[in-house]
Length: 607
Image (cartoon, rainbow, N blue to C red; front, side, top):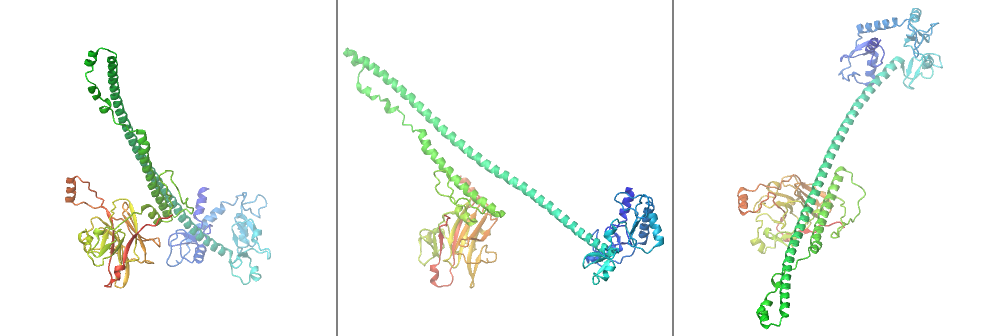
């Protein structure tokens, strides 16, 4: 039985799911009913195989496979003959003609409105061969037009309902109607196309689900690894603090034991002196009791020698300081101050890191913490204000005091006494220009402070200069070169220059000019030595102007220099210092340039 069922499934059209009627084959090798495949192509507008989705450039000319059709008809005949005497089971359509036990109906006549088993069907066909037969159905009443008492044979496209031939003369006279079989095949063909699209969407969404799950799993693994690494870092920090605590406690305990040993030694010496004094005092008391003049004078020849012995003058130890008082007022204060400073620095760094993580994930919290968060330590009296943006974090955490080194200034430049302002020289010779380690060609000056680690930030007012240069350079930057500072020669700068009559703002000098929305009035310079980044900010607009990334600040020490340092026993680091650099260029020959200036301004902090 299973074999018969599987064989019947092989002889069914995949569009109408019935046994093939006028079977044809597509160029890709799949079989369909001729009306089914042509209806599918007509409804979809594409010459495509519904099963394998192969597109055909031109609609193929289909020919009925006669051998396959004959095979299907023989199979139907064999199936029907095998079911001649099969009684109707529950749920199957019974024969309306059988008087006794009802046989299983094989066809239903749409004209007679009667279902026939195989014997009665043969009798019916002998009498009326032109009646239309359909697969057996039980609900014939639902298939009959109640108005005309005729079978539904047509489908109205306008009203999307089944009608009989008589309806075309009345209510549906002007409507487009097609035979039910044709409408059935077209609808099935469209359903096959929709199912194919649904299957494609299902596969696509299934792949998306897998990708999202895989991405979520990877993200979870990365997050777990990051959390483990962060825990390891903090564990190492706690372990380091515990080691420092143990070392400090051990040192204090050693000092305490040394003080105790010194006190014990002094006490022993004093006890010996006290015993000697008691012995002498006892001897003198015995002599004072005698009346023998000779004995008294011989036993105590001179009081001067007696007074020459003063145990306190040579054996008494110096006063020992109270160790607990030192620990309470010295060591404890130093520890509290160091811990408070460490707590402040770590808190600021963590606030900045947390803010960066929030910004990178696009999940910045709308609610801000309290504007003033005081630490419990008595030494921290100022509050920590949560930063509103990255520039504010930089301003709060990494601002440094920068001054210009007048001894490095080019002879065309003049540095103010406080080291905060740079102007063009008025022509008078200066001590700094004659004897300083100055720039001989380029109109530049260096900052006094150099940095070889961490982060630092400073701000410069540039509104008073027509052409300026700001940034940082390595300590080894050549001060006698003609070359403009670029990363290749150890310089990372931002500049405003005049090219003809056109103002140009530039980051790296080898790149095209920058297109800025507005002229910056104050520029902030931020350097992250560990990350290798140099960034320039428009302080008033609070926007990033330009940023160097992947900078290489370290350098290889020349062999001769390394040898001389090793001979001198001096430490030599491969991390050179970065120095702030400032520069101004003259435009034209008028003397208005004497009013131009660059000014290092205090970094504004949020209050």
